[in-house]
Structures are given as structure tokens and as C-alpha cells.
Image 1 (spheres, rainbow, N blue to C red):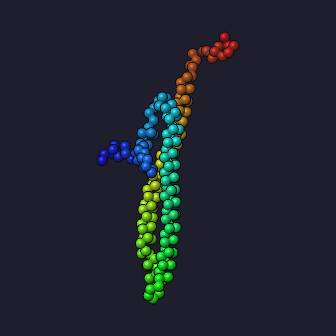
Image 2 (cartoon, rainbow, N blue to C red):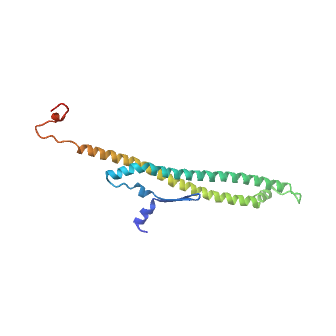
Image 3 (cartoon, rainbow, N blue to C red):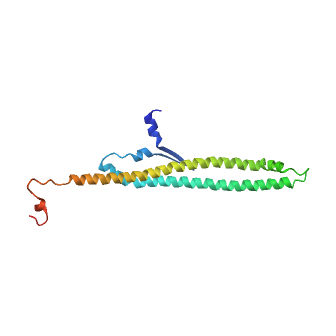
Length: 184
């Protein structure tokens, strides 16, 4: 991979949130060619771009929160399953009473509990991926906010340059009094 390919793909963001897939190139959205037309275009489209990235971040945050909620539900189900397995082991009418370690092992190895633990681990992997997507999209939002500040500053600088060029030079020995209202 060449340096150019790396830089092109470095700020490319591909995010799948639920069923929806978003492919954005942050670097292309940050480019600002010199000139008044480009600054005007950037000012006109900047809010929409920032809003788009903010919505993507909101979707990613919702997805992350749903996964966290699902993990909480699974944890409750695991605890319920452990309690049920414990009661089944304690109340078993067969043989001598098991030791505490034997009870712990039987509870840990209960098939329903193991299935729930596996599901929780899958959700934790999904949660890490969702957190990663959210962080990436938050970088995009912050970057577009910085771009907005940059565009406004560029526009301010261009305005100052234009005003300084609009100054009228006064010929030697004359004043601007004749151009003032009532000065003629």
C-alpha cells in the first residue's frame, strides 16, 4: 500500500449501525480550496455535514445503549439460572449432600447458564465494536466543528483583505474632503 492510498483511506469511515451501513470520507469533507466561492459553499453545507455526522453518532450511541441494556438483561437471567441450579442441586433427593465446591461446580456447568454466559460474551464483543464506532463518529463531529471555525476564520481574513484593498489612494497634495458629503 502506498503512502497516498494510506492517506486516502485513513479518514474513510465505514460504519454499520443495525441494518444501515454508512460510508463516509471525512478527509473529502474537510478539504477547502482557496477562494470565496469555496468558503461560501463550505458555510452553506457545513451545518448539514455536521448534522449528518452528529446523527450517525446518535445512532451509534443508541445502538451501544441497547447492547448495554441487553447485557444487563442477560446478567439477570444468569443470576436467575444460577439460583435455580443451586436449588435443584440442594433439593436433589439422591445421595449424600454435595460439598460447597461441588455445588459451585454444578451451578457453573449448568447448560442453560453456560448458554447465557456465551450470549453475554457475544454481546460484550458487540459492545466493544459499538463503542469503537461511536468514538470514530464523535471524532468526525468534532472535526467538522473545527472545520466550521476554520472556515469562519478564513472568511474573516478574506473580508479583512478585501477591505484593505478597497482603500483609495489620495493623490499628492489633495485630501478626501471633496468626497465627503457636502464637501464639493
